[in-house]
Structure formats: structure tokens, C-alpha cells
Image (tube, rainbow, N blue to C red; front, side, top):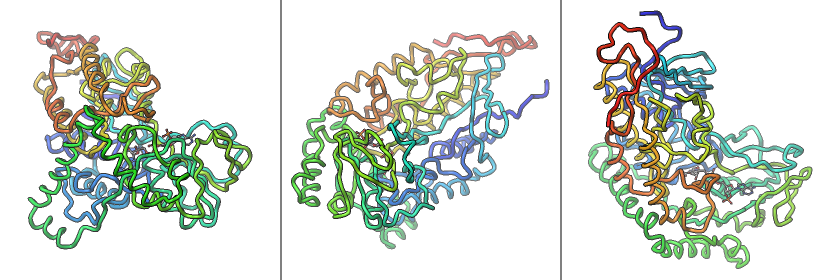
Length: 512
Ligand code: NAP
């Protein structure tokens, strides 16, 4: 056999956040050790590595926001902070022996499908390798989005995004503008309000905010969870079950969410006494249409004397003055963008070139779509973790990630069963049928009917991010790979009866 030009692995995983590390664990458990995890940073954690802003925490309870195969009896609080979640992921990397597989500071610059060799050529910042299969676990919250605001370049103060916090910059006593009122911003506002001189919050759209029932997990509970694992399991099951029961209100009966709106309105009334500010903070869309936020400290922080709420989006910057769409002006020393991430325009998609020579981004010009959230047509042996329509409005993404990892492992099993040099390419018809079915169900959901614009919707107004069902259902539909939804590709030399023939271009086998 000719010596390979590049190092070859069976699987290349991109990213070492929850998705990438989870993939690594499951691969090892399936007896596959011939894989690498390519990570652009110098440490594991993904979004939980990058986001270090003051107040950064998870609004899903830790006992649910963790791997089922790596329970942690020692979570200190019901909702963990970023440092604890990041430490948890570091521990997962150690406990499951993942470190030898991880290549830090290896940013994937291009992945190209080689139709002759039936493998991916993966170019990284530190060299090229080839892989039979690529698992893209870059996640939707990896690349910050900063709006194109005229005049921002001329601003002489400090500017940074919530996911790229500059800890060397001292905010104490400064006039700070916070742009956005999403999950990140509502954690940042109460964390920095006591120390900054003046805080001006630019709110384009108010968020629905519910109380955060957070508390310390007692020593007795931790002891019990450690000594009696079934208690830990039950706790997780209860947290999961409650959220599963909520799903139908989001997906089928948004009218039922009116009760939750009343709770959120009462939460606002308790903290903000000024009727004008309260009116500014009251959303005009159905709760759940945008992600519901949890905080006990956001509204009280807004009621403080050093905070100005500008109920309008940032439109322009003139010198050091920020100008809102309604004309309000504020001169500031620093601008913090809590403006989210490139979710519906997945950055990695621009770097992945499939069988037809087009990029995944080009394939997705009309909107992202992937069979069972994982496979796009024309991108053989390429699976996305947290792919199109796999997001959740109310529960833990780790549940979705684990379901997708079941799919990955079954995919590899199918390849083994087929034998030889082989690849699977999702049939375009199957991808469309899947996507249409998802979009049909989407019509009734609060995300599409709730009267808001959100990052769940892409530039064409299609909801390509959320899964319109329960996590149990998603788990069921990703339990196994249906071969009739794929075309089987074989190198010519690997076709039955073609032993010894030179490797010509791959051929497609009928599977239906
Ligand atoms: P986000 O939810 O996308 O929110 C972005 C915010 O920026 C929105 O309020 C948006 O307003 C605002 N915005 C954009 N352009 C603006 C402008 N020119 N002027 C004023 N406001 C502007 O981003 P994020 O808060 O970073 O959260 C992203 C996702 O990260 C979350 O949805 C969540 O999934 C995740 N996250 C999770 C947690 C957690 O606890 N688990 C914590 C933080 C983040 P509009 O609403 O008008 O678009």
C-alpha cells in the first residue's frame, strides 16, 4: 500500500466543548481510539472556555446540564457558574483519558471531501491530516456577532464582546454601555452595575425574565448523591421530566404560556416600581418566543441610580457618543456587546467543501438543513453535533448532544457492517423530507407564532435552529441510522468483485 502523504485517522472531531468531548468519550467506549479532537484554543471547554464574563453561569440546572455518563455528585449550586462547568469539562477530559487525542491550537481552516479516496482532507493551522469521518462539534455559540454599527471604528474607548471579555480592562468608575438584553447581558448587568460609574443599557427588545430558583446544594445532598447514586439519577430524571412536560406548550399550545407571562410580569412588578421603566421592560410578544431568561438580580440592578435604560437599539456611534435608534445619546468610556453569536450562519460551514466542490455554507444558502440534525446532502461521512433544528428552548442541550452521539456511533457501526472503504452520503430527498416535516411542525410553535424576531430564525425567516419536540422524541429518531436515507459510496477498488482494481472515482450503491 502506498505511503500516505498525510497522517490519517478514522475520525476527526472539531471542537472540544461538550459536543467534542462527548464524541471522544463515546468513540473510546465504542473501542475506537484512532481519532483526534482538533481544538483551536489552548484548553478544552468550547463556549464554556471562551465565555468568562462577570456573572457567567448556566441557566439549566447542573445535574441536567452534564453528561449522563459522567455524573458529578459535587455540583455546588443548583445552577453552576462558568468556572465550575469548565472545571467539570477538564475533569471529563482527564477521567476518560481524552488528552492524548486532543490537539490544542489546531484550528480547522478547511475540510475538503476527496471523492477518489473517500476521505476528508482536513487542513489545520498546524498541518494537514486525512480522516474517514469528520464530526463537526463547533457548536452554535462559538463565533461572536458584533453588529455593523456605523462609526464604531472611530470610537476611542474600549470595545469588547461578552465572549471575549477583557479582564485587564478595569470597569470601575467607568461609563459603560451594555448592548443587548439576551441571556449573556442579563447576567453581566447585575455583575458590573455595582462597580461601574454609570451603566447605559441599550435594549432593542425587552426579554421575558423569570425568577431563578438557585440555591447552594447542601453537604448532605452531595453526600447522598455520592453514596447513593440513585438519588443523583432521580434528581436528574425529575429535572428532565419537568422540562419534557413543558414542551407541548411551546410546540403545540402557545396559548397556555399566558400563565407563565403572569409570573414573569409579577416578577418585574416586584423589582421595578417606576411604571414608565416597567412599561419599557414589558415585552409585546408571547413568552418563550425568544429564549426565556432567568434572573433574580437583573431587574433590581436596572432600578439602581447609576443605570440608564435606553429602550432602543444602538444605531450609530459619533466619537465617544452612542446614538440609539430613537435618538437617545450617551457618552461612554467602554462598550460591551452582548449581541450573541453567529448561529444560523454557522462559521465552520464556510470552511467545509463537499463532494460537489461547494461549501456547506453554499449548500445552506436557502437555510440550514440536515437529516436528523446531522447529515447534509453531498457531505459524505460528515456529521454535525448540534446541527440544524436540534436546539432546545427550555431544556439541556447535553440531552440532544448525547442523542446525536448515539447516531454517530451507529453511523460508524453501519460503516463497519458495510465493510471496506465506504462512505454514506445523505440522500437529498431524505434531507428535504426531514426538513419539511420539521418545518411543518414548526408552524404551530411559539417560536414561529409568538410575534418576535429571534436568533432562532434565519435571514429567510425560517426556524432552522430549534427542535420542535421533546428530547425523548429526538433521542428516538436518532437512535439508529436508516441506511435507506443514505447512498453508499465505495471506492472502485472496494466494490464487491473489483478486488485489485485501481482506485477510480467512487461509485454509489443502491440502498433503498
Ligand atoms: P442573544 O440571545 O443572541 O442576544 C443578543 C442581544 O443583542 C439581543 O437582546 C438583541 O436584541 C441584542 N442586539 C443586537 N443588536 C443590537 C443593537 N444594535 N442594539 C441593541 N441591542 C442589540 O445573545 P446572548 O445573550 O449572548 O445569548 C446567546 C445564547 O447563548 C443564548 O440564547 C443562550 O442559548 C446562550 N447563553 C446561555 C446562557 C445560559 O445561562 N445557559 C447564558 C448566556 C448565553 P434583539 O432581541 O432585538 O434581537
